[in-house]
Image (tube, rainbow, N blue to C red):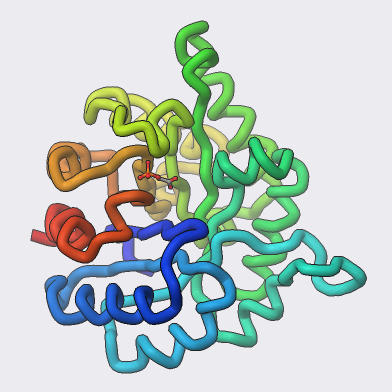
Length: 251
Ligand code: PGA
């Protein structure tokens, strides 16, 4: 796994043809040393897996997974199913899933374990609401999300996880955390993990920032020492924008 990466979260957007066009643009234009992960709608993962053959800097993620291995869960998708498609990454606990689908840390912890059992890298999302930030609870919220979602893992397991800090107030709002605000939380996350495990383990884990990353702010965010890359929503849907954001992390 690369410590530096940029993840595009397409959410519920684009047709299959648009997805292929966008990936082709990326493959043609991002630097060879870039490491890009696309969290595509689940229906596209199989055709896109074929489409990215030979595009060595492009990887695929699912946006969600079920916490059970198999069974009577109509409409759901399991970690072994993703593994059978050769999918390498999966977002877990995006705030949209925490809010709209009431996903709790305990279930997210099970999803993380499921993914690791099938050699898929979880991209575990944490982040506070505006109200929590204004009440000075940011660090408490993040601690709880890390503790309950990830701290059941062994050192060897948690080293296989990517963490994305996405303040809810910054997602899709055009109002990003300042590089200083993001760096403060990222440094806190690394220290908190180092306290529970150790510094070597904490240093292995890529920490992404997400929430209104744009061509304008990407470079100043990615320059910060504790920010290894981005989880990018809106700006990952247009090739020109996404290419610029990727280049900001892979100059
Ligand atoms: P945004 O979304 O870049 O559109 O704010 C980020 C995300 O939800 O992962």
